[in-house]
Length: 127
Picture 1 (cartoon, rainbow, N blue to C red):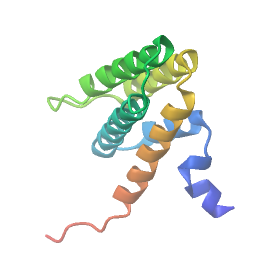
Picture 2 (cartoon, rainbow, N blue to C red; picture 1 turned 180 degrees about the horizontal axis):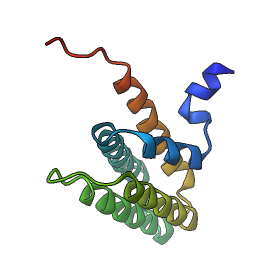
Picture 3 (cartoon, rainbow, N blue to C red; picture 1 turned 90 degrees about the vertical axis):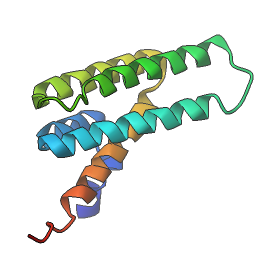
């Protein structure tokens, strides 16, 4: 049971968003970066097997829009409140359901959460 709690892949999508919202600014920024990278991989998967019908191209466009919003929040000149990041993730999830991308977004959120866990377990740097 402890493994299930610690394995983000087993969490529901709202739990993943909630967890990311609890992270400190640096770790949360890293998680959003991991999610953006994961979405880039999802585009590569969608475009790896022609022909490209209109629904597939619509999913690529939707992912591109998600990436645009994510990366625009990663500007280094100032901290962002976690509430804004959580709201953005909620919007992405809502749009992903409309576009048939819920599973892809959940995989990305789980990967981001898993990466945040790994980051938080790294030993502190020696002074």
